[in-house]
Amino acid sequence: MARPLFKKILIANRGEIAIRVIRACRTLGIQSVAVFSDADRNSLHVMLADEAYNIGPAPSRESYLRIDRIIEVAKKSGAEAVHPGYGFLSETPEFAEALAQAGIVFIGPTPQNIRDMGDKIASRELMKKANVPIVPGTPGAIQTVEEAEKWSHEIGYPVIIKASAGGGGKGIRVVYDRQELASAFRACQSEGKNYFSDDRVFIERFIQNPKHIEIQVFGDMHGNVCHLFERECSVQRRHQKLIEESPSISVPQKVREEMGRVAVKAAQSLKYLGAGTIEFIFDNSTKEFFFMEMNTRLQVEHPVTEQVTGIDLVQEQIHVALGHPLSFKQSDVKQTGHAIELRICAEDPITFKPAPGKIRLCRNPQGPFVRIDGYAYPGYEIPIYYDPMIAKLIAWGHTRDEAIGRLQRALGEFMLTGVKSNIVLHKNILAHPTFLDGSYTTQFIDRDITGKPQKLFMIVDENIFLITAAIEAYHRAKGRDISQYNIASRWKAYGRAKQMRSGQ
Image (tube, rainbow, N blue to C red; front, side, top):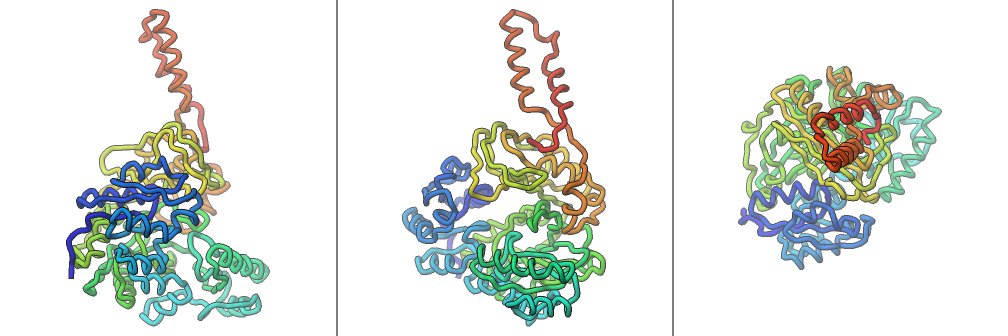
């Protein structure tokens, strides 16, 4: 039976996703509780929440991953529910179970849902039983290089080796011939052990022209399951997404409908609750699609789905956790226009290495149909301990070209200095012919961007404004009419002439 709205929700996360949930709570008239580590004491989510509590030192294992401390704060603050965001404890069944034992609602899927999909080998078998197409590969984990050689020969090169518990680009290797196999196999085992305490690996056929297409699904406690169409996430660096868009320019309408039907069938087979994403590998040559994995949480890229469907996914998560049925039927969900999301990261745009530090200037773009989900502000110091993403820039348009045009305009307004960022990288990608015609695959960054000469966009040097102010102050002190000097225009023109690749 559905219950009244929660009075107070704790957000067990940080940064932009914590702010996103805080805003949903405020819209619904629910009080929000933030938690923060020592490194995040001055983070924006701490300032925006109704209450905020310190949960430990900067390393996540001593703060954001401490189930006991989060539950302690939930009880102390009187929070009736916890929203995990994404990352950290969002896909940890023990966290959901511990909350239930404490009488606190977990705003997410059931612990069994998380377990079923958290193991890539087990999830493949579950999907196979549900008649969901899976990539040809080993029936289970393999233990030795000899087994790997046998199966790779049978599947046919190239193959991809994956750690069963892997994620975030860890524990994945593509192998093109037998000579590379042994070292790649051991590397995947090692990463699985080091990052996930699980050294099991399996092998799949590597799709030659792969696109990453995912379907947003939603289930409630009454057995209703719907999909909210697809997102394409093929622009990736180091197996991590950089740009996402909806709809995909590459998926034919009949295939789109079939992917949605299959995703719903997969979620129904799990009796899935809440927001989840069925991820498919899509062969751009044959237009075949295969199950890859399921993320049992809200995705980073959920705003593009919100923009094209008009459905607030976070509010829907809260309502479903309360026992309410979905607020929509499948026939109610429509794709309207086109939305694209850019992940703005504090990282070197060439090497992709994180570049934490203090932000000197920060000006977010504005304007029609432009959305910013972020937490950066002037003077904020980006910690070294967490993911380098500091904002998401999303634009909607009636057409894909219109959305791209709005993003280019918004990127031109985006000012972020004091740290390196990938703003200029995004400008180059949006202007690249392969991105513009939609033929890009998951190999696009490696093949067409990394190590290749790119267009040098002109950026105003941050020091220009200081120099201009100093010169104007000098002339005013001398009692001179500064209008005749046109100082600002001249120095701004000089600054634009200083072309910089790094976006710094």
